[in-house]
Amino acid sequence: MNRRVVHTRGGSPADVLTVIEEPEPEAPVRGQVLIRTMAFPVHRGDLLAVESYPGTAAEPLPVGAEATGVVEAIGPGTHGAAGVEVGGRVAVFPLPGGWSQWILADAEMIVPVPDELPDEVAAQMLVNPLTAVMLRRQAQEHLAFGYDGVLVQTAAGSSVGRLVTGVCQFHNMGLVNVVRSERGAAELRKRFPDVPVVATEHAGWADEVRRAAGGRPVSVAFDPVGGKLTEGLLDLLAPGGKLVSYGELAEEPISVHASTLLHKSLTLRGATLGRWLYEASPERRASDVAAATQIALTLKDQFDVAATYPLGELADAVEHAVRPGKIGSVLIRP
Image 1 (cartoon, one colour):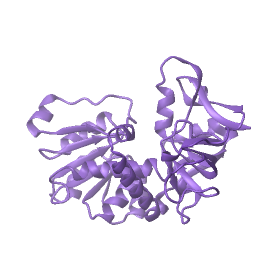
Image 2 (image 1 turned 90 degrees about the horizontal axis):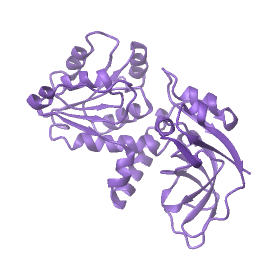
Image 3 (image 1 turned 45 degrees about the vertical axis):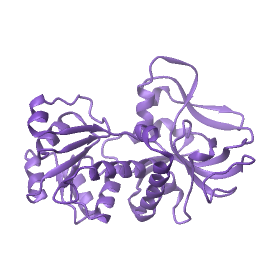
Image 4 (image 1 turned 90 degrees about the vertical axis):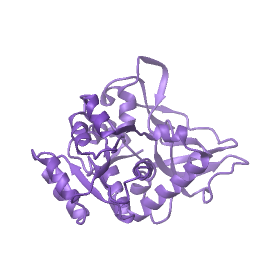
C-alpha cells in the first residue's frame, strides 16, 4: 500500500490534511522514475498552498513539493540526470505530491544525492538552496551591490537566511542580518561571528543596521516577512535601492507612501520559486540546481532539523513547522 497526504478543501492544514491509503504506483513508463520516499520537509509554502486553496476539490489534492528517497525503478528508455540509477538516493523538486511513501516522478525532476549528504540534508537540498541562489542573483543584478553596497536580510535565522549568509560569506558580499529577538541574534552570531546581526526588538534597530553597515549604502534588502518590517527596510534603502520580497509571514499588508518610492527611486520586486520555474530556461535551471547541490555540500551544517515525525503524527508535524522560534526544518519520515 501507499500512504500519502491529501486535502479536498482549503483551511488550516492541521484540520484539512489527511492521510489516505491506496495501491502502490504502477511500474514507471518512459520518462518516469519510481522512488521510495525516505523523508520530506514541511515547508511553509506547502502549508500556504493548502490554506489558500479556494473552494472544494472534486478529487483529493496532493501536497508537498520536495522529498528525498531511493530509486526503485526507472522507466524503459528514460534518460535522466547523470548518476540517477536504481538503488541510488535522489532528491525531487518540483513535485506536487511529495508527501507520500511512493513517488512516481518525471525524470527531469530528479537530482542525485551526493554520498556525503545524510537523508536529513537531502530532504532539504533543493527548495531552500534554490531560493538562496535565486536571491543572490537578484542582489547581484543591482549595480552598486558587490562594490560599495550592503545587503540587509530579515528573518536571517531561518533556514533560507542561514544559507544566504553562508553564500554571502563565500562570495565576500557585504551583509547585515536582521532577526526578531536578541536571543535569535545571539544564536546567529555563534554560527557566523563575522556577520553583524541586529534584533528588531530594539526600538532603534534601523539605526543599528546603519551603524553595522559602516557608512556603506544599503543597496539591496531581502524580506520574507512583509508588513511593518518591510516599511522599515524601505527607509533603510539608499536611493536607487532594491527590495526583494520572497515571503508573507506577516498578516498585515505593506503600506508605503508613493513619495518613498518616487524620491528615492526604489525598486520593489517579488521573487518565488514558482516564477523561477516558469521563467528560467532549462539551462538556467540545470545551472541553479548544480549550485544548490554545491550549497548543500558546502553548508551542510546549516541544514538544521527541528524535529522528525512519523507520517502518523502529521498534525503534530504541521503544528511544529509554524511554531515561533523554531530553528531548522520539520521533517516527516513516511
